[in-house]
Amino acid sequence: MWLLSAILAMAMLVSCSGESARVKIEEPGGADQTGSAAIEFAPPSPETIPGSQLGERIRLGYQIVVNTQEYARFYVGNRLNCTNCHLDGGLNPNAASFVGLAAVYPEYRASNARVNTLADRVNECFERSLNGRALPPDSSKLQAIVAYITWLSRGVPQGATLSWRGLQRIDSRRPLDPANGKNVFANKCAFCHGSDGLGTMAGPPVGGPQSYTIAAGMARVSVAAAFIKSNMPRARGWSLSDDDAYDVAAYINAQPRPDFPGKANDWPKGGKPADAPY
Ligand code: HEC
Ligand code: HEC
Image 1 (tube, rainbow, N blue to C red):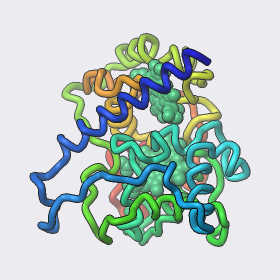
Image 2 (image 1 turned 180 degrees about the vertical axis):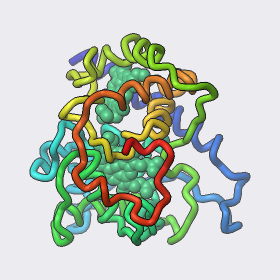
Image 3 (image 1 turned 180 degrees about the horizontal axis):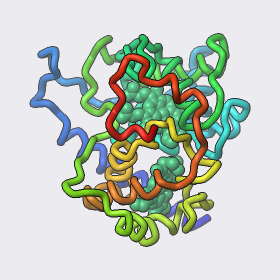
Image 4 (image 1 turned 90 degrees about the horizontal axis):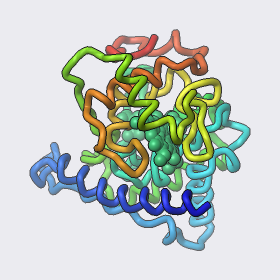
């Protein structure tokens, strides 16, 4: 328990310093692509969710995000919670943050060649990242998650460019080295994620039947490498070289994981990324 609190406290500290790193790197010279002033990453804290009826819905959304296993169990098919990847309840600007997303959806996505609502995108992660099932459109849980993200997007104008959006991509400058990936995992990851990658009390599974599916964003090596570079080992983001982040991402994504039955329907009109695993 003591160790766990120490790790959590460290994680909080580092996610704060990581925050400034991300904003410094990404801030496009004080102006976004539309020429207006850059939008600041200034989300409200979940502690300030109001006590109103709407506030109750927002709070439920927050609870589902940080404890998906308990609050949306029926829709989850593995051992992950949203916050395991969207770190700090979606408030971490280095980990595919939820902040501002209500201002950028609905949005066209090449992966399904249609305009997706925010609720569609949430369901995509339920199906692919959590190996679960989509929530019905009228589900109060789905509406609660959307309400939480909408609350985190207050003050962000519709159509704004979010400098912190997604994951900060990196490049590897040499071919992948599987032996190095295996070594990095054993030395820097196995302590928390288990030597087999199946997870421990200190870290969720990164492979095996309880992990994300082959059709999840994280199953692409470039996406996992970006996430790992800025966030892993937990509380020591930016400590791996870009090459090490790529090699270990390739290593975990080569582990067995759930298939995704609908994968044949992806990218119906093209636009498939080069590192899609199928
Ligand atoms: C295994 C890791 C993982 C888990 C678990 C996960 N996601 Fe995601 N999610 C991702 C990745 C990776 C992306 C894509 C980020 C990018 O585009 O750079 C993403 C994208 C998203 C987006 C769109 C972000 C954007 O910028 O458009 C939303 C919304 C989202 N997830 C919601 C959720 C919710 C809600 C849950 C829990 C029900 C969840 N995710 C669980 C990895 C995960
Ligand atoms: C100190 C413990 C610790 C170490 C070491 C560590 N992780 Fe993690 N990792 C975590 C925790 C905890 C989470 C979930 C974060 C949360 O919920 O706040 C996580 C999440 C992840 C995720 C997304 C969720 C999932 O399980 O798919 C990936 C991928 C990941 N880590 C990969 C790595 C890699 C690769 C390394 C080694 C370079 C590494 N981690 C080292 C603790 C650790």
